[in-house]
Amino acid sequence: MFAIRFKETVAFMKMRKVAMAFSAVLMLASVASLATNKLNFGLDFTGGTLIEVGFEQPAELKLVRAELDSAGFGDAVVQHFGSSKEVLIRLQPRENVKAAEIGDSILKSLQQADMGKVEMRRIEFVGPNVGQELTEQGGLAMLTALICILIYVAFRFEYRFALGSVLALAHDVLLTLGLFSILQLEFDLTVLAAVLAVIGYSLNDTIVVSDRIRENFRRLRKGSPEEIINISLTQTLSRTMITSVTTILVLLALFFKGGALIHGFATALLFGVFIGTYSSVYVASSIALALGISKEDLIPTPVEKEGADQDALV
Image 1 (tube, helix red, strand yellow):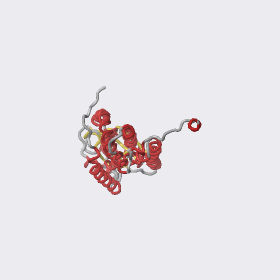
Image 2 (tube, helix red, strand yellow; image 1 turned 120 degrees about the horizontal axis):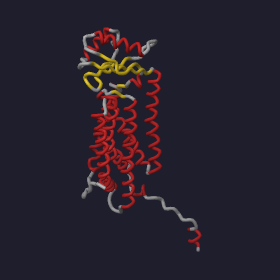
Image 3 (cartoon, one colour; image 1 turned 60 degrees about the horizontal axis):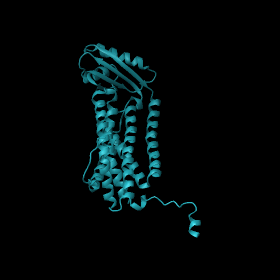
Image 4 (cartoon, one colour; image 1 turned 180 degrees about the vertical axis):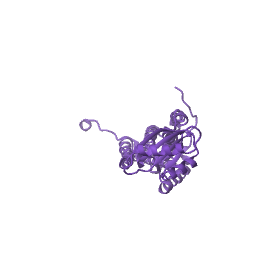
């Protein structure tokens, strides 16, 4: 099997303070953006009507917005979708008006304008109650995942690793949400699924690193905790690089060739793979080291054999 061998130990923990400061700055920027810009929620969460129309020639968004404004749809959000000939129109919920009627009105107004041939590609409608329920359920799904991971890792390893793993996952989720907030990319159900997938990917990478650190703490007799963590990270670096590169190659294909419908999904996963690999090395491991992980904490408690007391008396 192909593998990359490193002859010398890479001093990852030497840069942990710089990395933690860098992560803190990114997290503060994400929080600030989420507080001010917030997320650009898609139709799945906000509710409303989504209409996709196709033009015979490249469409100018300014003209489309002006035409919709004159037709009574001044609140419409207009953007290109996949190409300059495809336009996506998103409208807020309207009471007592069917989505089909809204779609017909918009299509007629665009056809009457001097924009060439215009045809309806698709129309979707989501009620405001459904959107609110999806928002609440999506947030609960991420929170439940983090709590379950905290409990699992605490039982599987040691509470210092558990705290490091959960903080690393929270770091990955916050930075991914911050990216979508800063760039104002549409956040819909596919992106939420990608965020949950990022949690799983990052957790898997963190578990592999933590397991190797635990093994080396028990196996290596010499060396400080920082040196043992550096050795463990170097030993798992080959596996981490191969896994990350193969995953990124697939995601790049989805990003460039998957179409506009899964563009947000691919964007979230691409960023999540990068940040998840980084957090497994510099966030989870650095936090465990800062909390004072040592050999004594990871040495298994000796189990007394049955009948040992009787043998000692004899």
